[in-house]
Image 1 (cartoon, helix red, strand yellow):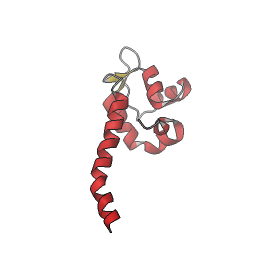
Image 2 (cartoon, helix red, strand yellow):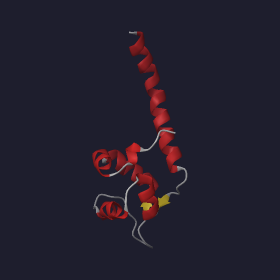
Image 3 (cartoon, one colour):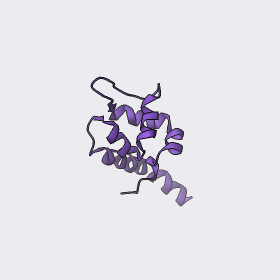
Image 4 (cartoon, helix red, strand yellow):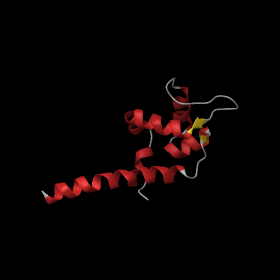
Length: 96
């Protein structure tokens, strides 16, 4: 009973910590990622990055080369978590 109450009380804090981890991992990137930065961020190679930016549902700006808006990438990851888990090492990043 005490354990359940404690877990319930800590749940919002855990969510905040996860959001901070995500924000801190993005802090070295600007508002728009290059393909190379996308590869680094998701821990994928060029072939997988090319496959990803070719998807019709992936947020890409094609003016002046391929760019990925960071905030839209995060939304896409949330909506496509299963694809990200199976095709990248994004969720395997070390805990800071």
